[in-house]
Length: 208
Image (cartoon, rainbow, N blue to C red; front, top):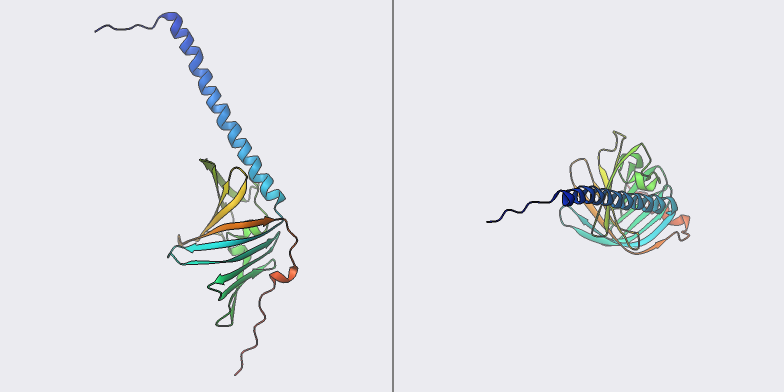
């Protein structure tokens, strides 16, 4: 069997080409990463309101749907249509969870939810109070966010389409590892919303 030897001049060519290929791949990756960072920062910088339909899936497999409204910073409404017994509202400090069937109301401090990072319009990759990591796979960008605040032990995962750059879904993971995923459909951005949307239902006082 013949043994082929690479001539010295070919070695010189290879030694030149290989570093150039490595540099090209590195620069291309860096450019793509910088572009994605800019897209993420611009999206949240320009996000003032959102109205959309949603489908929610829990870790146990329960599926529900409804309408969601954001008026940032501070206000949101999640109005469940099927099943229609839940309403979740927030006007800035408390998340108000209401069961329309049982006529009950529970209040949760917004600061204790990883969702507050989005609602309080804190998302920026340069924000040192949050930890972020993102990846781009086949045109789907996943952004994982966790607060440095010890009171917020969960994390928020946002998923975007690349072209056009739009929010498609998010997943809230709590401290126990339970996940709730919300898929966004028919989104309308930066539309003026009535402030009345963010008031909880006014249940009658219980009678003795």
